[in-house]
Amino acid sequence: MVRLTRAQTQERTRSGVLAAARAEFADRGYRDATIDGIAARAGLTRGAIYANFAGKRALYLSVLAADAERAARARRGDAAGTATPREALAAIARARLGAGLPADVLDDEPARAAYAQLLELEALVLGLALERLGLRGRAVRVAASALTLLAGADHLATAAPGFVDQFDVVAACELLTALPADRGWPRAYLQHVSPARPVDEPWPDGPAPRDGVVHLLGLRRLEAAEESVRSAPAGVAVTVALVTGEPDELAPLARLVLARLDDTLRRAIPEPARPPVRLLLGTAADALAAAAGVAAPSDDTEVAVRVAAGRVVARAEGRGAGHAAAVVPVTTAVARPA
Image (tube, rainbow, N blue to C red; front, side, top):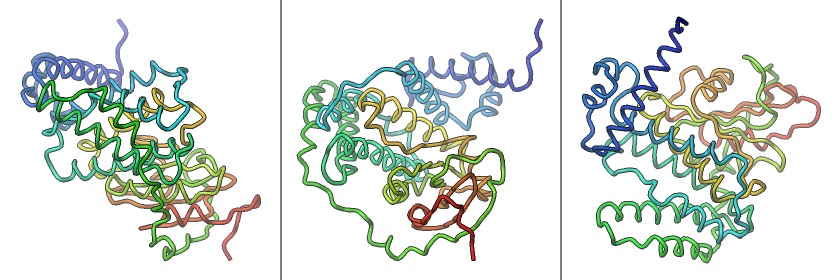
């Protein structure tokens, strides 16, 4: 008999808990599901459940995230059939209808604040995709309006069954392309941001990320991702690493939103129009944060570094850090501080 390692045993236990939670939520819904019910289905104690997950909400979000990740993987290689912003908005609506969260899942301020910022990030990525498909102006507002409409439709579908006509919701999302062009960029305060600090440092831990901007953002500051993405010169890679001071509680929520976004992009946006920004979460993001010198990430973290030729050539912290790091002039020779 093969003896499992401790890590393998833990992974098997987590998988069993998730399977039990999926069955409990499917049978009883989020509100009426209980940790005791999940423990009974898994053949474990309450303590064993809490040793692996922070609570019912973390379990629920982890189940949804795993399902969304599985759906996205199944669509790898598929080509979205959209060619215009209007077609893309219709495809986004079809992909997202029914994917809303029950209102009582986000029942505290930290979770609601993090979710609002995660939606800002989602609207940014979808808005950039609409722009790459030809929508004029800053399309983030269009994407945010579509997400708002879809969330409202999901809520009413639960609160007033039979009231929502899904075909009308999809058609309404298509019409959002007629919104007046949003010229709300750049943000006024960016012209007053302190320049990034020039440095010349080897990447301190393991292989360096690809050359470009590495933007480290806590879950309460994700709206700032637009500053590095839009400020970076054409062809400069941008990596946004999401970090949190409450990984047990908030990381499952972030994982769900990123998985849902990945699945939506695969279903609604053709490959050439998908924004090149790279989003990282979990161990990959934490490793980037540690290597960039952020020892204790929090939900208010806002740090950016510029990487060139495998070395850190500039650092910036605080409001506007992503913009400051993105606009640093970098030549083929690594810049060195005076």
